[in-house]
Image 1 (cartoon, helix red, strand yellow):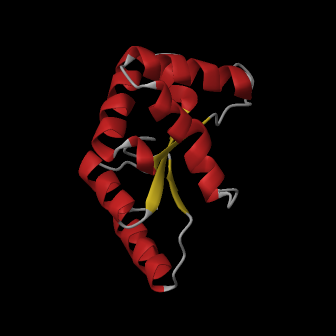
Image 2 (cartoon, one colour):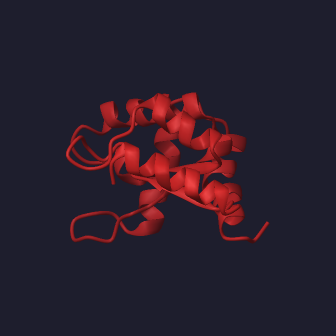
Length: 131
């Protein structure tokens, strides 16, 4: 969806008191969903969690993709971010392995264990209504 459509959707969700919202793949690519950091921050201010998938941590260009994701996560804040695997295609790591790679990559970028716990466990549990 476009950024304009996302804004309309977030506004409609807020009007309907929907509190569990995920904006996924915010950096997928300019031909798909691509949000600037400012747009991600605005979505988070509107109550959405921004979902980064583990693909930033492995494959072609992963050091640069990891830095880009880490910079965006810092700007948004771990309290509004979830990290998921989004793997399973042939040639990609298994889900648990992809999450390990993502955690290692974010740790190397300076994220604390508390930050990782929040993004990998607490925020997803909140989204699922488990907290």
